[in-house]
Amino acid sequence: MSHRWMFDVLVDLGSYASRNGLPQLARRLSEVAGQAAHELAIIPSGRPGERAEAPTSARHRAD
Image 1 (cartoon, rainbow, N blue to C red):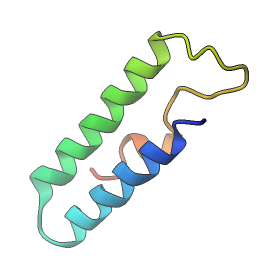
Image 2 (tube, one colour; image 1 turned 90 degrees about the vertical axis):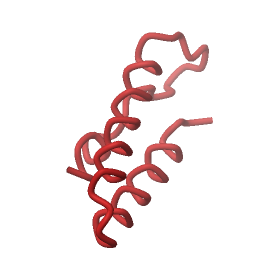
Image 3 (cartoon, rainbow, N blue to C red; image 1 turned 135 degrees about the vertical axis):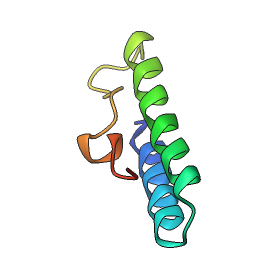
């Protein structure tokens, strides 16, 4: 299973936070997405073709 769903959820939560006046939460969610991408990039997935890195749009969208 791809990890993309997790980044989609984090981006959606970050967008919600930004639209609803929660800038610190939006920033933290962006940091969480970056941390998740980092950790997934350094562990072997064990599944051919699985993309560990976050989609580019998920990295700083909540900024």
